[in-house]
Length: 173
Image (cartoon, rainbow, N blue to C red; front, side, top):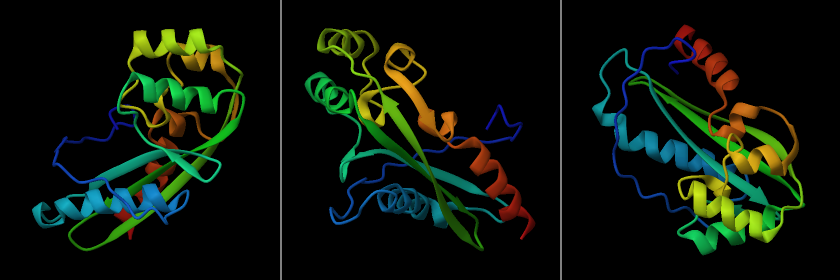
């Protein structure tokens, strides 16, 4: 948001990120972004716009959330290696009067990466706060991502173009 020239304040609140296992693909981050927003709804003052989001990695009808530990991170990247997956980010805009939730999907083509390189990456970068256990803007992205179809910033974790356009509409309506 700083890069977009939008003034903001960070507020945090613990929100349980469990979701119905029957949710598929974009349904998961859409649900979670809205769930996070709803936790703050009663705290909003008139004129404030709350922004919440959630990102998942989706491959083969399976969600890759944040890894719990190094072994899980290595397993995730190993499974993504040599395959194409989707990064899906949902953004929820909430005010005291209204709420919208939208999402963006980007296809990521991951090259085949050797296990030793994956283990080194996990050991050095500790990507435990990242869906799918990797950051495209880090070493693994430099050597492991062949190409993407869609928004680079979405893969980094926040679809800036989508957010900016939706925020403009949200404020104007």
